[in-house]
Length: 155
Image 1: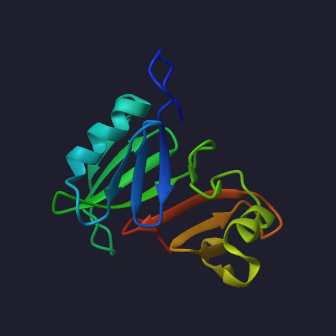
Image 2: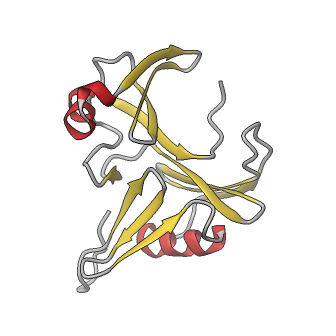
């Protein structure tokens, strides 16, 4: 996601260890368990605008707060940034994998021997390089959503 101002392009990059706000000349790494949730919320809001929803919640994983924009949710535990969930195209990892990508894209990015595919109560899930996700309708379809860190994916 890039800014529309005259400033250098800025984008949010999903990472297995957090989120990277890439400002072109400078990238800021917002790592899980190291940053306050409010700091990450403010950094992402500077890119995507104000959140559409913010709620306290109780998840089995321990996440107790969620901040959501259209297609992206960040999670926190006790005020600390602990995870993300994405279902918005154009939000990708640095390897280019994101919602809308295919298994072939994941294999190319992480190496086919490093991608695990399994059936769960959610459907066909995949995991590679510390990132997990779910396909829309099976391993031959596009990624519907993906996540890393501690989040609220209900099984």
